[in-house]
Length: 294
Image (tube, rainbow, N blue to C red; front, top):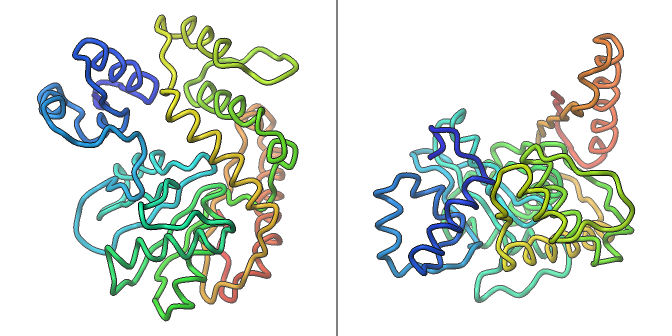
């Protein structure tokens, strides 16, 4: 499916059509592990859970120390699956949905403790390689501190555009969370969003997807609600989070914004260097070792 050009939006369309045709309840994540017709046919006959999100997901198999990838602000680790084309060894994803025996985290530190339990249950000896994007970068840093507190070795800590600032307005106004999720999905699939005032509704997003692809397929209500609830909860947690000091080295990647590409090379380079220096200043007090920026 993906070798033929499939993407996340087409994956939603395929799974939706399969479920409709066969009266099935396959989650979208099925197609990541069963990306051929034969594999999908086997999934139809299985009794696996139809849950869209599971606590720990195997994004790539292999031998060696796995990269542990922490979910983004939407509570999902699925985006890290693309790293499998570029990294050797296994990759696992930590999603925000709790294990049955976990107490819901009321702070990022408690969240890190839960995730440390999950990691140690799968790989009790360590060492650990941690990777986090955006909100996941903050959690990965807290997880590294928690693992060290338990006497574990953190071999690598890599942060991708780690955010230390929460959107206070959306955090305190849940009605905007679903709108933010819908806009993220549309932008990720290169769908233009008209400028307007007020939150984007599901019906409006559905119409934009239909115009773009000819089919009205957005995430299931279950998945969309989960992403919106995670986003709202995570920004509230971020507003209250106090960073601790990680005893080791950190690598940070700061993405260049898309609209900057149109600027002249000299100015673009200046803004990119400013972004890197901003990340360095933000994280330097919370890292005892070297901070390397790219």
